[in-house]
Amino acid sequence: MVYCEELKNAFCYIGAGGHHAGRDYFWGYCCFNDVVLAIQNLYDKFGELRVAIIDTDAHHGDGTRELIELNDFKALHFCICDRDYVSEDGLKIDVSYFTHSYRDAVEMFCDQAKNFNPDILFWYFGHDTHVGDYGDIGLKVRDYREIAVKIKQLAEEICNGKLVVVLGGGSIPEIARSSTLTVIRVLLE
Ligand SMILES: [Zn+2]
Ligand SMILES: [Zn+2]
Image (cartoon, rainbow, N blue to C red; front, side):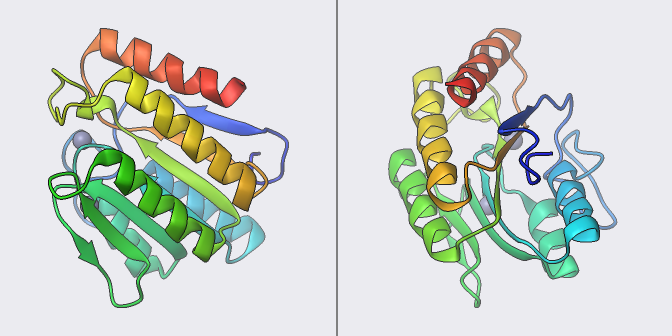
């Protein structure tokens, strides 16, 4: 619906994770790879689209990375996690929050996405990065707001605002409530 512009954008309030589900394995409470299923659905209906994905869950999106490679999607997969990596084709990128500030990492994604010129943008959003949650890297709700504003602006600039936010990891109800509401409010602005 977002791709067809029946919806302006979307926040998918998924009750479990998705990015650790690969072809023949799953872990970390990720049974089905929601983002990859959505992309496959788009491919089935509309052919080979260009898709940009930013993963801001605290952990590496191993399942998503594997399935993008196996399915040969035309995808930019940019994952902010615990390591630095760039694939040969330059489209599978990991940026470490140990070696870069989070703000810089998001900025790097924006530059990459502008060059890539996608038809639609996916944001795999985990609030496990929040202070006190199980992937704590010191982020707070105001950081999520800043990231949301930036990614929404990016989508408006490069793909007519087509943005699908998919909920990833995080386990603390109060953090879930405030962080998801914050992101949703930015989408509604
Ligand atoms: Zn995680
Ligand atoms: Zn990664």
